[in-house]
Image (cartoon, rainbow, N blue to C red; front, top):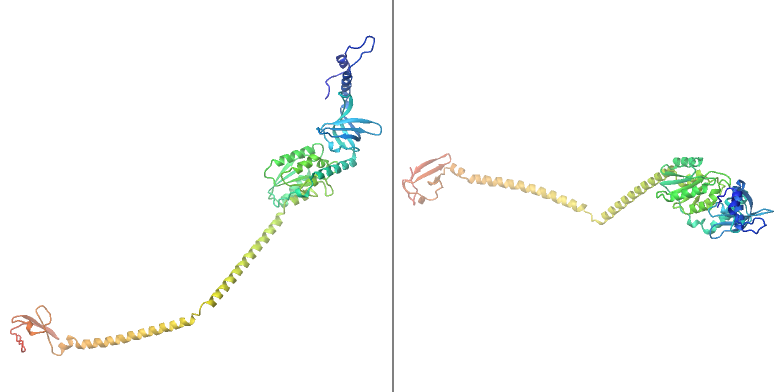
Length: 425
């Protein structure tokens, strides 16, 4: 912690203790000297913001999370401490060459001169590669790269998230490819730095935001090409663990095809370039159109074949039924013949009956009263109009009627003779 004292003279007057023997030089306590040196060191601007390069030695990382080590070269050793809030602890290992940025002070409890480190970077590509290899081996041993845990990508995602810089060419390349190939999907950009000190924390924050979105189907983590140093944020342990904890499948598209980062190993799918990631994440609508047309043709063919097969089966069933049903043609013809004969017989019977009726009618006409009266006979009627059949039906004085063939007369009875013919006037 930085002291609030301003000058050594004031510090002397404040911390001087008068407990020295007479005649001897002024004596100071150990704490006073240590505090004085602490203030002097921390007030020197060259030591307050110092960058030191050296080889790591005696590295310790206890359960507190702080890092204790020494920086050494051929002639000297400098004790160092980096608290767990510092950055770059993954580069610390005995024998590695690192560049440390921090300040010089004294740990007054032990009187140790120490370099309080805030940030560590590997010294040169060789050191970076060594740190990369060590990180990869450690995370692989933890199971972050296991193929069995990698998730399949959705075939037709409705909502795609892209984690990258909002100002670079990468996002434009991805949008151009997706707009051309698969305009059906909604694209959400989660902005983040992709290079520099802020990149790793912002990428981690972007994945935290991603995990709060319920409707995202898949995510693309992307940036353009660059050196190992430029891509180093994607080798950070915090980024690897953020990808591992993602709620949705992740496609990594970092750098060029030859670039490989820790993020590529953790991601569910690696794409050689950001544009390739856009092609991998979704199908081409033209291919989908072809598939639909092909399926439609197959459905038409299946329906047509089914109808033809069903018609053939129906016709076969009808043929089989016809074979089992008795032949009704001959009986039908016999019935037709009988109906014709019956009709002819009926007509003959009617004609014969008509002739017989005419004969009977003629006979009846010959026997009718008119014919008899025409031969000179008459019909005598009683007073009530009924025909008389006996002389005993009359009395003298009764009125009677006599009908002739050509007319009738009215007369009365003068005499009744039942044994002989009566004379009437």
